Image 1 (cartoon, helix red, strand yellow):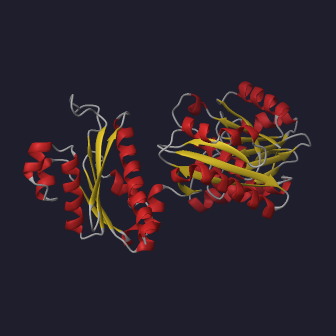
Image 2: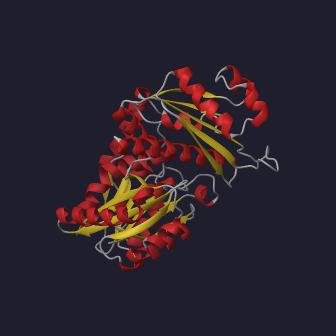
Image 3: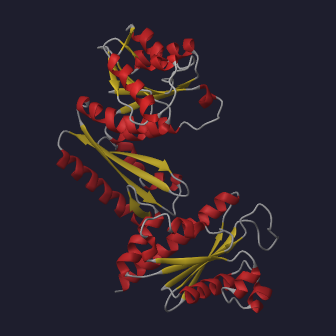
Length: 415
């Protein structure tokens, strides 16, 4: 069924807020097999809202709106749906009572305009909102299904998951499943070239290349009546992809580098510590974003100045004078120093020039060294990144995770 998402709110057009609602709904719907052909945005203007809804009703089966369900004069979604669907607004006395009780329970003052939220297009159902005062709307007029959700993200997500998703699944005529492969170390164009024949002949399952932040993802999607057949199709597709580009695949679905590395370290009963200069704690922050990471992540040192490198990480001052803070030698000394200081199995360090200033002819912005110190040896890697400061910092952390992963995998192979 063709589905269209319509985001309503002048603040979206002005760029005052990012439309995270459409992103969330699109991901949820795609995962259960709905075809989203259009995503539209309009301001709080009654004429334009009606125009957008009218166009959507002619080209899509399901119309999902967010925003414009509040009690103020510019909240006009219910009125616009009423006109386009030709269903007059009528008072829902149960929702009128719900709104009154909400204000009473919260000890908030209720004004007359709040009763506006208890009016619904004739024949529609009210969708409960346990996070706010604005009920949602479900209207099936025989030609289109109108689903209207609040604009507040917390309210919208709750209502979608608890009131909308099951209803939509019940009218879906097929099963669908997706699996995401996360890749690092290969660009989107290079990836496309390696699996070009699969992309050309795809039917079921299908493949979609998705650009991530410093990585590339492949979404495999299969559909059909039988879930066992769907799972087999996805597994076969994954095996084919792994045979071609397996060395770049580091995780699937909700995996990210911190989670994958953390699981491996916990499994191997190994601990790690970090020493960071140009990333300023980003690597440590990403490690600790995973619940339970204290089992394997013991801590870190943000050694931004040479004094901290010397006095805390025991980097020899002669190394700093001879080779500089951004060098292979300093990176290795930092990794060894933090490993010894925090008594961990592994120590990893990052030192570099994130930019935009600080570069020289011999050491340009984007030059980064990453060192990994293990029980037996130390390894160092040189990067030449080409982005802005935030990008260089993020990619430094991505490469650091990748180097840890490669080491742990190679260690496993040698057993």
